[in-house]
Length: 268
Image (cartoon, rainbow, N blue to C red; front, side, top):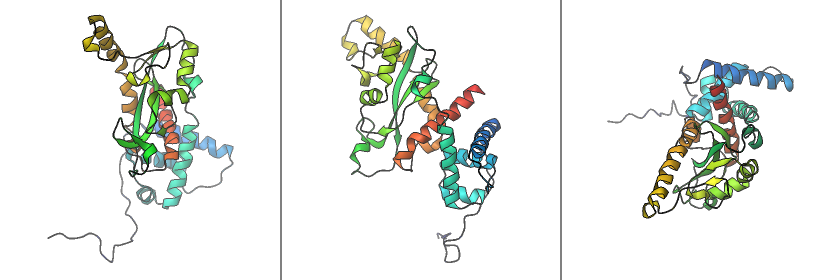
C-alpha cells in the first residue's frame, strides 16, 4: 500500500526548514560576505532581512547544491522572490571580480604555454531549440571556453555561447586566439582548434598511421593537455553548472561568479 504525503491538508502548505551543512570553507563565506558588505556601503543599502553573511551563505548553497529558490527561501525564512533577488545580487558582485582576458594573461608571453579547451553546461531545452544543441555532446547546453595554466588552474572562463557554436569559432569570438597570438603564447588544444594560428598546437589526425615521432608527439601532447580537465572538474563541482535550469542569459554570470570563488580558494 502506498501512502501519499500530499493530502488536502498539506497541499500548498509552506515548506519546512531544516538544518544542513555546506562543504565550503568558512573563510570563503566570510570573504563573499565582505564583498557584499562593500556593495551595500557603496549603494548605501538600508536594512535587509538577511545580513551579509547569511546572504553569502544563501548564494553559495544555491551554487553548490542547485536547490530551487522555493526551498532556499524556506530554509532561510524568506520569500522565493527575495531569495532570487539576494542570490542574483551576490552573483553579480562575484562576477564583477572575475578576471578579464588581458588580466588573465598578464605576465605570460613568449616561452610560456597554456591549455585551451571547452566544456558544455547542460541546460533544460526542447528539440526545437536548435542553436543550443551540441552535436559533439549530443545534448542541449552552453559552450564555455577555458584558458588554464599547465597545472590545470583556470586563468579565464569565457562567457557562455549556444552549444552549437564550434570551439574554434567561440575561441576567436572571445578574442582568445588573437590574444595568444599577439603575446606569442604557446597553446595546447584538441583537434577542434586546428587552423587557429601559429601558436596553437593540436594533435595529428590518424596518428597511428603516421611515423613513430608523430605518435610520440600526440602522446606527449595529450599528457601535457590532460591537466586542463581539472579546470572543468572544479567548475562543475558547483552543482548548478551540472544542469542549469535558469535562463541561458544568466549562465555567463554564474560561470564568472564561480571563477571568482575558485580564485578565492586558490589564494586561500
